Length: 386
Length: 132
Ligand SMILES: [Zn+2]
Image 1 (cartoon, rainbow over the protein chains, first blue to last red):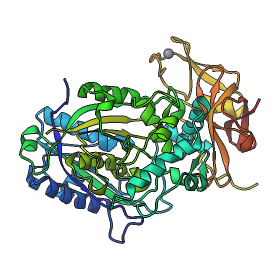
Image 2 (cartoon, protein in one colour):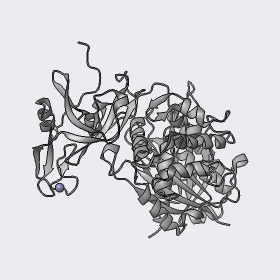
Image 3 (cartoon, rainbow over the protein chains, first blue to last red):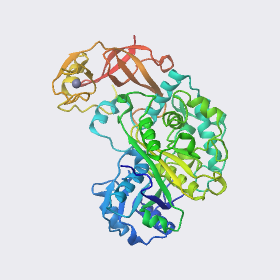
Image 4 (spheres, each protein chain N blue to C red):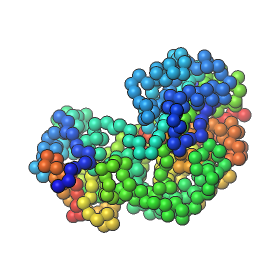
């Protein structure tokens, strides 16, 4: 069994994130906006959408969420679900949509995420074991876990702060060409990153995503629909998912993540080598996330992420284009829609809609979605066929 | 004495023996009778082999800092001052989320540490560590 070539992305909708939501902004309202955009982009009729995978917004959570969202959007669907694997949810939706289509359950699945963030918002709710064994010690939110990963990586492999900082710098160069990015006006230097306030040692302010408000949607369709679609279909040709912990303390390793197994599975399904992709879109809640992802996804050896980043140009015109939309570090993190930004960017690049940041002759891309503290991992390989 | 505002553990039926022993300044962990592994945090079944005979056993309280961070800006308003959040790997194997009670600049990865019972309220003791 394989999902290779069994479904394709045919339309996207994505909002420019807002630093603060407007007075009338709601998560469901944002969902309606990006759904309308994605349907228009795909050329389908709303009635063609017969599947819904949706992310639960922290600003308006609740049980029986998918049916509520479908009702608000006026959708009638043959398959509906919440995907709750943290930042990996959007990438996870893409292969789940393809699997449902391949199983004959539905023909066109809307993958939908949107959320609102206001300064000072509370962190998302946790499970009892985290409240009992993590919160009393101040292991709250995601910052601490990634900081401990970075410190351990520096200890084991001699990784240096300026190597991590370069991720934010190169991705900012990409963001300057992306009108949708939140931080797209000024370039960033390594000195500026390392000079920004230390939040959780060794991570500085500019190495950490900013919560913003926004949303994104992708429509995944059957081969029959994709072949007559308005846009060039972007085929899912490889997918892999893996998780082995929720809290990083109980992971087998701080420096070797479940990405390895997810990425190996995705490339095996695609029948491709790492060198066969033209660009990568790894989840980047922090600079260290990208460094570890590039190692575990097999683009360089374990422990060599620092030198690899130093030696390669990660910009859209570089020898290793990485997060050409700016990554979430420059795009902003509108809740789960931050994770979708890597998927939409890969689709844009492969459709040839990269604008001023178009990677030349891009025909295949790698996407990784990452949930929690290097917990849930989803790797995808996407392809445009000529 | 000022009010303690940080989150406190709410023991479950599964974890109650752990917190009871901690309150008496003893560190006890579950050990699986089938695969003999020590387990943290407390479970109803062994996460390694699904064994259901888990015995409470005292452990050394000695370990090493597997990693740590100094949290200068916390996500919770009760954590005002910078603190050292750490993962300590016990000699017996399990890793624990904890705090290192030491000046932040003195903490290092791989540093040996020993358990320190912090009676944060009259009814609540947390398992922290100090340089050994
Ligand atoms: Zn066992």
